[in-house]
Length: 331
Length: 303
Image: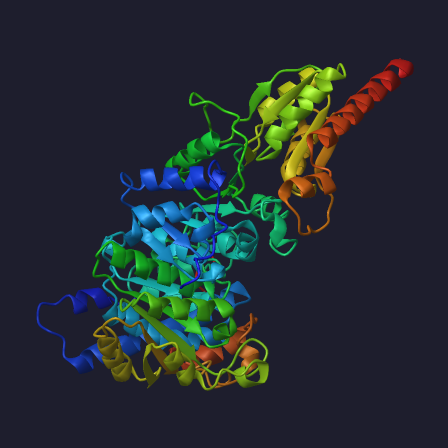
């Protein structure tokens, strides 16, 4: 008797990957120029839905991400709409191809990366990616997006396909909290206030948005009024909204599953430093590599959970008060 | 200073093969002279690889590519990608010769404000088809074009010129494997095999041989030719166009610095070098330019 086939550890229902993949497959009907590129990851990314719905436009490149990334430039050059799919860490391998053959040539190509941040969990430090936002954010003309839940991912998928220009978007293969309803709106370059508050602004992207909302609850119980901003577009960052939050709350926490160098925190700090300086605390990976563990365990280990965000918020509020106090004494 | 080739080639009567070869040889000579002049004016540039590629580029643009300045955005045009982007002076020269760009403007090579950058950029010059210069990538871009054109059921072909040193890049072999897997018989890679690279001979830097065996192992249709023999280049392109289900590679044996005796086979003329007035004049003389032509090239206004 033949042994049962091994159970595939693929994406589970309710993941960002699934939302992305189902949307792509659905839009593939109308968008006859849409092609999806894969580097033998489709079993674990949303690309598997498109492979099934439009096999003739599913292009296999094998484990050769540099060739895949640059070839997307050629596909775009002849009028197709290429979507490059693989893990975030393998996109890093092809940053230079994305730079020259996509962004420098202003090709209308989309990069969608799963297994970003702690998403690769038990695969360990080799496969976890805390550097991708920094790498892609530094490329001129590259739009960088990290949606927070499946509904937003579906909307962001539509938005990047409608947008003319190279984009990098993070998804994820673990079950994500549902934060939004069907009436949710997504616009590239716009942050959204999900919860209002006056003492501090928590700016988050991706899976950290759910943790920031949880942190705001914890803070409310301690008498701190926290505003939560979903900054789904890391580049261009919504500096108008950030200035407004600076004026109205005067203190910030950024929260991301990424190195504190170069990602959302840096984008927020760069904008505030130039436009409206105020205290910022950074919740993220503190310039180290990952290790094996379930994503939730790793979030605890690396200090990314709601209590960590809440503690950072209190530090930011404290710094704001100290600065205000010093100013008062100086007068 | 641009020869009026198109008006001749568009004559109703078929051009005898020998006349075509003469025209292409003249085009190649123009490429060499123009590249020497533009590199002289720029004060830097890679002359060796521009000289070695001149005959291949002349045959591509003058006889092989279905690509015309007055229809340069035709979706079914053939594409050419200069993957060895440092040979840009030769690409600009052949473009000038066949009317894709202005010959005098192309002498502004590498200058601030010029669209003729040190390496080709598609937003500056759409007819160059791709931005190249980071070796390995142009091949992948050409492969993406070939794949896309097949999907669109276009009969257009895609050609890319790669350097021999470029074959040391892993991405090249990723693309080589991918092209046979997808049976891209509309893709033709030409290797400018001049045996020299930036610092030294290929075999001193990183051995390429057995090169034909490598391409054979990747299951490409292979031709090995003299990259300066115009008749041979033309007949090889015809054979490459007739392959089915397999991409084709033309390994073109060339001489680095071809046509300029003091540059030939001397790796010190590969890298970005400065040409003195005397060297530029000596090179142009060797390329058969007369005094008037030399003055016209080297004293061009605004250069």
